Length: 355
Image 1 (cartoon, rainbow, N blue to C red):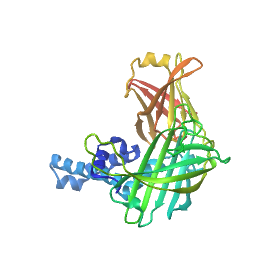
Image 2: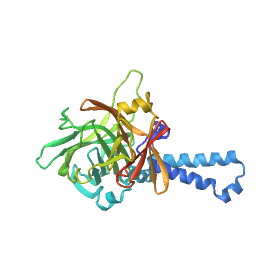
Image 3: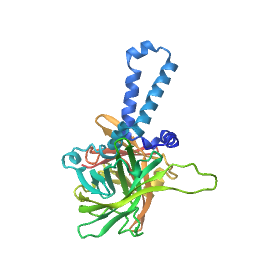
Image 4: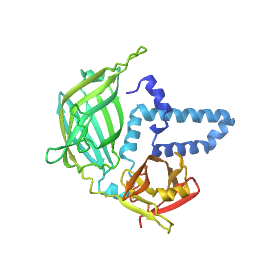
């Protein structure tokens, strides 16, 4: 559903397709199977038993990618990942649906969220039975849309025909798109996670309007050597969907070291969608002169269990003539944990606290 055989193989190979939440659940399932007495008695040979477990886990990974269960996991990854009670109680994820209809196609914005770094959108689209977008040889569904503020000014222009390469109009640097399609019912689900450029922040989206310009999909085809042709099936229209979201409602929470460190003090900002640590170049040279991709970790104690995160983005920045390294972790606990550990090369553990 939405994946060709080659895409399926590619999906299975990708470790990043499984979130930390889903990975944790898989690990727990794995442990449960290993500790099940009845299974141990019936399958005393460890090698054969391990093969069955591996097959079961592999099947689960495939299901999470291409079936309605996969859609549930997709929603968990994008919209159910926020464990902070404050985010839950104060409605960080705004629920819909907001509905727009054009070209006999209904687009619903089921839920969305935004902080200063990330915009998340979850669409449900109902296609008519005779829609060309339901062809079995289509994949990689996506939308073209823009967002206007209250003053009718375009503040985000994502993949639009009239896109302007201006930071005021397009502050988005990267995007994660997941889709699932049921051709029998004509239901297409799409989730977007749009991340801002370095040093950029999302504009205030309170009472903004999201305008979808087209729904597209790529046609699967076997290209001959030297060919570079992409066939796109597209339906254009205008679907206007209101947004009720303000990025200032959940400001970043500062975290500081809980001990006196010489030369400089690493600090951090916890956003609803990420955790950003800043450490000076001077201090970094003393602790890790030649840091690599695996040099840094964020360790968090969540409900009695330790979770580790690697940085998803690193960059150097300058402020007042000082150079520092900024690391962004995909930890979205926000105010849930009062203390986390910033670990450098598994030998320097720096406590960071919001208290």
